Image (cartoon, rainbow, N blue to C red):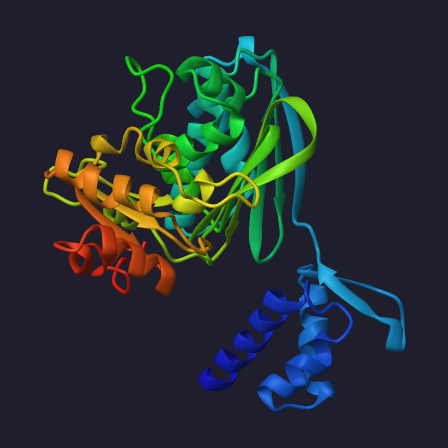
Length: 356
């Protein structure tokens, strides 16, 4: 009896996890996956409809199932009235999320308070709007402010070339325009805690997808003021905030000493990474870390000058920093070994074991 209930729970969870991608054929997909009849699947579908986890449109062969929104909420707040972001969390947001595992609730508390505090103290805007959408499988949140825009502000404060360059600096971590009051760690760690995390501001966007463990930069057609931060997380996610922090801690003092830098963010469009100036842009500020992993996923090739600056000149000038190249293809690997013959293999040795 217990095993039958467990199998039934597995079938219903499978339906919830796949119905958005298979709204019209979820019954046949589930029947094929579990080796049961379509009639058996329909009993589980009816159970989920009764629980209000699913909704259905159409009849007979035209039926299409989808997740039923459990929460759809939006609220605007004048920034001048917010003095403590944790008050908004306890009063308005936490009750909306309902019953979630402690680790998931802690991630949401961290992400919401960090992003709202960033809007409060750095945006120079007038209003922030928060939207929460929850289904039986996951929760999504959007926090939008009408301020200057995060990438535009980083560009201006740090004297960077453009907003694209600001995304690269943000992805490295330890970036703040107010070092007296902030460490610059909040957005970096928040982006690693959620399944999906993105920032849209100005004409560029920064995206991190946990399943792919990758950072992406996108170009937007329209340039709008303000900053929109999107966060998404499975309701049954198993990770903890401690596990995420530990991934980027390389010593006993629990400091933020390790980072992973997506090298492709240093590229503009279809250009190749060939010059020393590109290398210097990639290497800026990484002397704040003890361990630096350069992720070459998506980088087809690098030039000799770029490679020499990164893998010979910089390590010779900073011997206390452990610099590694991960996810490299054959042409990149050969170029690294060419310019750093005495340390090429050690630079590449963590490619299969990085795990962050």
